Length: 590
Image 1 (cartoon, rainbow, N blue to C red):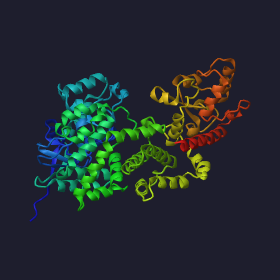
Image 2 (image 1 turned 30 degrees about the vertical axis):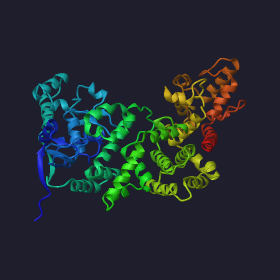
Image 3 (image 1 turned 90 degrees about the vertical axis):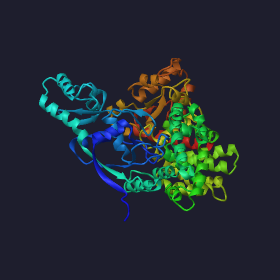
Image 4 (image 1 turned 180 degrees about the vertical axis):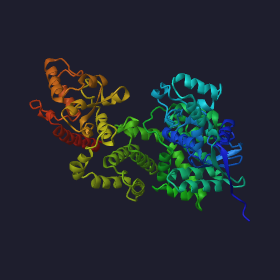
């Protein structure tokens, strides 16, 4: 008869809180970071309050299991599944900070309104409203007791029904007696079996990605140093995001800090060029594609479970070392900067960034000349953004591209073929112009336009000295050439206010000085001021510099005819044509 692999229990929330307080429950390496949003934590607490089902957690009473902090477990309960629920309890009911997927310490403060029996994520307005208990952790951690807390609430809210308030605050407190299902795995199970259980449980939904599966598989394989590779990925992404965490991580995980994996990323402690901040999914995707020459991460999961697992781990280790190499990473970031992408906010096309790093590492492995690598990677990255190359089926496209990068006739020939097919005259004359019909200054195509300005060191809109590059390093504003208030006055639909062709980057003071002025008016005043040598709306004091600034920002302008500023739709169409031409020139200059 087979030994039971698990047992089912119902434990009060108070018991689980006790495990958290005493450190009896721990998160192993096969788990993921805390990814729930504050509203999701709020919904979880609301469900507990109303007695709705909230799922279950899975624990494993096992010692000497690698934990996320690098230590081996000596605790009574290893948390295998349900981390998000347990961390939500810790954050909302115990008032503890959580470490977000961005590696930032954060409080998630949940508020409760007894009169309305309503939960909310605490805001400044809620904190100032006496009708709310702005932080429910005070109910569970009150030193003065529940009775005094209820009394204080009623004193702050004259006229409140004391009986109802006491009953509802008491009901909130009684959440601790509600039960949560716990599946306890047998202590006899090995790590590989537990990982398989974890993967199968989460594989039925959409909560885990192939990268999550791969990280879990890596963590379980101590025989091949998989747990160290997992930590290398985790800690590199952590330090790339928060370099100042180096000393804290080294102190918290002295065993890993003593490895050459950690020493290989020591350079990050002084790294401040955070335009490319990879998540572990990005890192695994680049490592796998550059080393294994495949684009689909599900293949990595298969390889980590296959017959050649030892060779897989050797290649994976080599790929990770290439990725975190100081010279490689810094040179790649320098290439992005040399293309005009100088700020993390401009790198919204994440798959394009990853594919560019894949190409960089691939060409390095092929011993191509460094200057040629820089040129090809710049062109590849910008071409990927221009064409929205990874917006459809990114994994399939990446797989095709990785094969092309490693083709017998070389990556350069593959890129040239793509340029001919993807960047034809029809693309520039028709398709790309339609892409500029989009709205919003966070759009990838607006970022492309800004990169084209940064590359040639254009001045900010109406700036006499500050370049667009300078404005990214200080205070910059997005100015609407046709101000939004003016567009409302002439009955232009709100959906068209933020068209890309209506946006420019300028200094804050210039944006404020123009205010809501109609463009026909302030462009006329700009010209008049330059003729008289008295700058208006900025420091430009002569017509030559003014018209050069208009050209840099693709402003369709005729000194003798300002009618273009009377017709918004016509202005957008004419400016889009100029923007397309500028971006085209920019691409072929890379």
